[in-house]
Picture 1 (cartoon, one colour):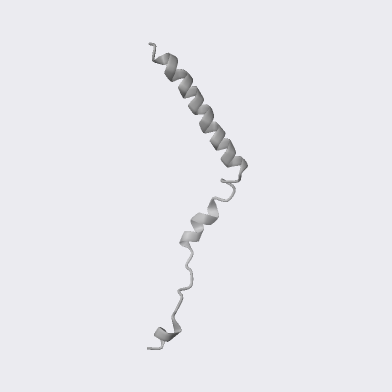
Picture 2 (cartoon, rainbow, N blue to C red):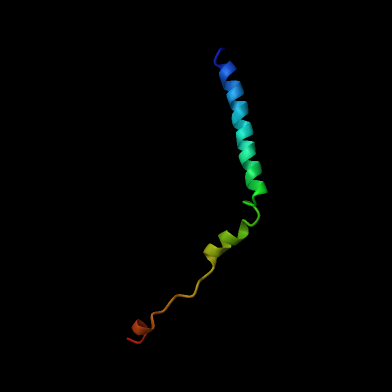
Length: 56
């Protein structure tokens, strides 16, 4: 029972810390454009061809 006097306030502090980090991430724009980075992986980039090796 005595451990609850430690764990309950500790969990409340942890929840507020997580909410503060989440609010900071929202305010700093971390979640503004989540689509572009995922689509960038799927796009084909032109392969760089070495002109010296391509003619052989």
